[in-house]
Amino acid sequence: MKKLLLGMCGLVALPSVSFAQEAPYVDDRSSASAVVRSLYNAVNRKEYARAWSYYGDQKPAKNLEEFAKGYKDTANINLAFGRTESEGAAGSIFYNLPVAIEAFAADGSSKVFAGCYTARLANPQIQDANFTPLHIEKGSLKRSDKGLQEAVPANCGGAEPQGDDAVLAQAKSAFITTNAPTCDQIDTQTGLPQDGVQDYTIKYKEESDTDSDPERITRLIGFACTMGAYNLSTIFYQWDDLNGLRQLSFAMPTMDIAYEEDGNTESPVHSITVNGFEAADQLVNPEFDAKTNTLTSFAKWRGVGDASANGTWAFKNGSFVLVKYDVDASYDGEINPQTVVDYDSPP
Image (tube, rainbow, N blue to C red; front, side, top):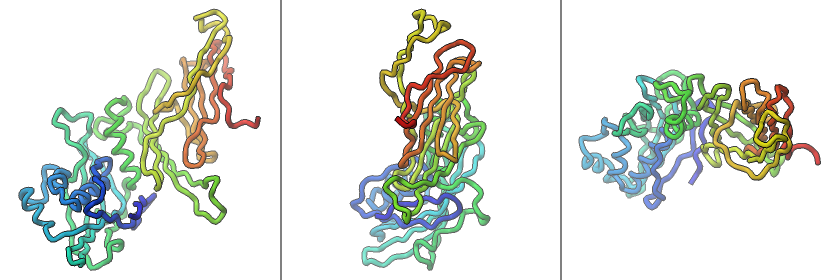
């Protein structure tokens, strides 16, 4: 099976995805393309009730029986996607996805159909107990005389796409579903951060790559989540064509801090001892340096910033790795951090 490659910008004709009838069960609502992929996985497995469930109130047939009859002569369906476009309206996000399918009959003959699917996600924060997940709102495919790859429409609206690409749309959907309900920096209409989404493209080579190997590409996408008196915490997702989309966690040291006057944080610091590490799912006041591909955090322990914790994570071989962590544990009105973790300086 070829792996789906999602376009970074503009329409990209993607490798087809073949689902054999014995293919593993796929039930994924994390993005519009994932829902449509799950739909055809269900059809190929003859699980028509599951396929029917991916539609919302506007069903594609009069009833489930008629829906299943539409596939009675279909042995297998291959699938290809274009670039997802998204738009917000009335508390929902709509995703328009160009699609082409190649439907094979039992005798081996095939027909290609192309068109668009529209998926809808109502803001989970404003839904009630009758929760409706991301689902297919409508779909329309017409017979095409082109091959599967060539049949994928350029877009779903006639003009060149101006909305999200598939990766960004998937990240937004994952954030809205998983994290937005617990964040306070959210626009209640869109379910996304009020100040927008951070989106960075990183091109790199791993240590094992040769000069002739092509550059690898990954995406870093950040969503502001919670705001304190002087700290803003951000959640990050990373995407690459090998691992797909995933939410990031960041290694951070845990510490024992002792003061010269026991329990008095206004007194001088006696010692800072790293006693372990933990994984944090948010970074405080983060900044990304595109020149060095590093993420930094600056967590103020009080507003003036004289007491703080500062981390640096370098992008190495496809992952963000903790390389330095500084702590200023003295509430003395001065900026005088102490390095407690340093994997980046020469020995």
